[in-house]
Amino acid sequence: MSPEMDTIVNAFLGSAALTSLLIILALLGTLNPYHRPAIPLTVVTMVIVISTYLASISWGGDMGTLAIRSNLVNGALSILDLLYLAFSVLTALILRASLRSRPDDPLIALSEAESDSE
Amino acid sequence: MVVSLAAAQVWAGFCLFGIGFAMHRTGPAFKRHPAGAPVVLLGLAIMLLHSEPPSPESLLVQAATDAVPWIVSAAIGISLVLSGAPIYSNRKPLILLVGWAFILAAWYFMLGILPDLTLTEILSWLGSILGAALAIAVFAQSVRYTESKTPTEPESTPLSEKERKYVQSVLKRHLEASDEP
Image (cartoon, rainbow over all chains, first blue to last red; front, side, top):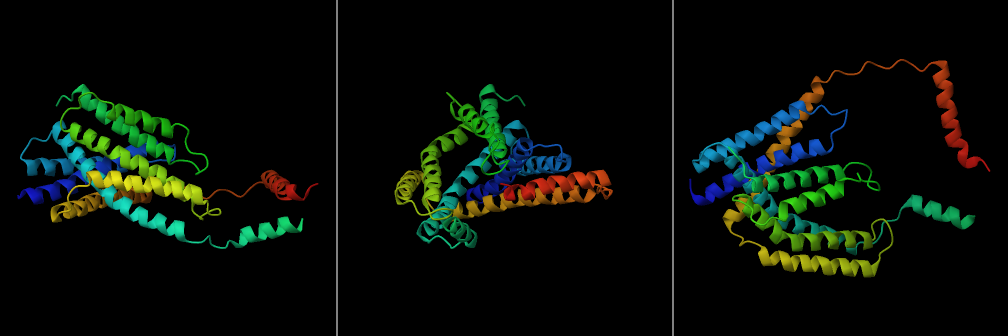
């Protein structure tokens, strides 16, 4: 595989693994008695294992903790790169929010009219 | 198979950061989980305050440290602009101006570390988006499957006369409270 293709495949496999890890952490952080997390946790853990296995095949290395760590680091780096894109979109959105005029709210107008009449 | 203490420290910090962020998102917007923000800060401190992170975590720590100035400026700027923009209240020009100054500073810091835009870089962004989308789709399907296998609760029995009177009195108390002198 060419180095360019390697970079793209590693970004794909790494971000799948990292997103799965973030889902696991989100499930843990929001655990409540109504959750039934067993199947989702098993499935996202499988995504981490399978993507790491495929990544280790592409590196030609062993499937171990180093492969999992490397795959997760690759995912974190590629998702950090996406923040540039996200910030560009966000800048455009908040520019629009800054320039627009406040929409008329009939409920606020009603409460203001009521407070004036009192 | 042994993970060094330094690597474990980076991942423990990362996990605390993720769990704290998820905790912070629970609850209504005006009353977030009180432990969320402290857990996020603790996680960041454990992950980034590192004398010598091992490889490959050193790459992550370095990238996160490089990104701190622009991400912090962007977060401050965006929150200021959102509170100064005419979304929920009238426009506050001074807050808007300060917010945009932070956003411009964030752009300045970000452009300093932005990698060269090559076709490989753009395709790698696309790969990341597809990878994240795949993980979310698999998770959503597993949640859908779990929900379909969850036995439905039997229909609840109607309220007894005593319960009906109690609910009626609660509703009456709350609905008529504003009319009372």
